[in-house]
Length: 105
Image 1 (spheres, rainbow, N blue to C red):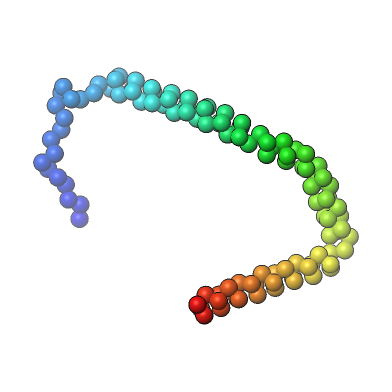
Image 2 (image 1 turned 180 degrees about the vertical axis):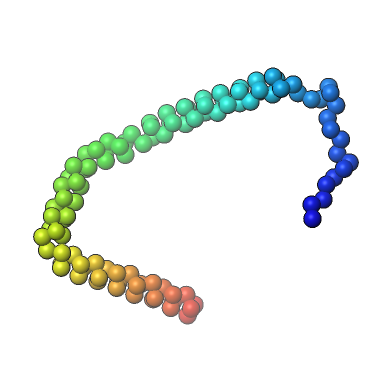
């Protein structure tokens, strides 16, 4: 059941803000938010530029290595599948050991 507080009075005419004033205040607030976003995006670009430069320098070798691995997987999928199974089994063993250590302690 929803209770309402009937003692709350509506604002007087002198306290009410006109629609045009409210719209102007909201537009000013929106403009300030846009300026803040521009400033923050500039800061983000300046702080992330060293990472972007490093990424550009290693992107091509990573693509080449990924292509070679994909080619090897297409040619002989058995080895990659066996390695995947071993990795999955190792992960499951790690989870069980972690659960066991949590139970013991």
